[in-house]
Length: 198
Image 1: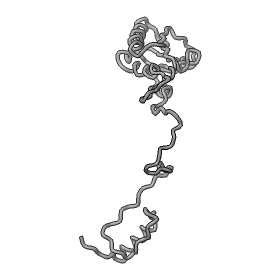
Image 2: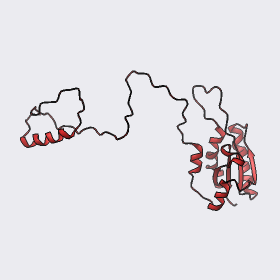
Image 3: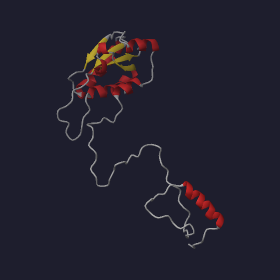
Image 4: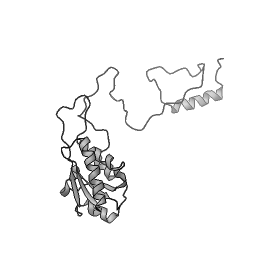
C-alpha cells in the first residue's frame, strides 16, 4: 500500500466532514490535518436518541440490586384481552360486563396440571355436546410458593396454562372466545369460555 498526501480539494472535504463528526476518543489530541492517511476515514458511530443503557456500568463492578422478582412474559390478562374478537360484539360486551350467566362451571382449584387438563377437556367437550354456549372455568389466582428454589415458578400455574390448553386441539375446535371473568364471577381467577355451536 502506498502512502499519499491528500489533495487540497480532498483536504477541504475532509475538514468539512471532521467538523460535523463527534470525536470518538476525546482524551486523545487531534491529528495534524496534513498528516498522511493510510485509509479512508471510517464513518462516525451512530448514536441512539434514547438514554444510555450502560450508564453507570463498570467492568468488574457488581450488578445493581434488583427490585424483586420480574415476570418478563406479557401480562396474562392483557394477552387474553388482545385476542381477536370472534363472536358477536353485543354478546361479547354483555359477557365482559358480567350480564350473562354461565350455563355450567368447573372448578380446577387444588388440582395438579395432570389432573386439571383431562378434567377440562371432558368438561368443555361435554358442555359443547349439551349445547351450552357460555361456561365458566375457575382456576384461582394461585398461591405463592414459600420456597422458589433456584428456578422460580410462576404464581398460578393453572391460570397461565388454561389459555394454552383452550387454543390447542382438541379444545380449539370447540372454543370460540376466552375472556377473563367479571368480578362477580371470579375476576382474574376465572375465565369465560364461549363455545361454538355443534
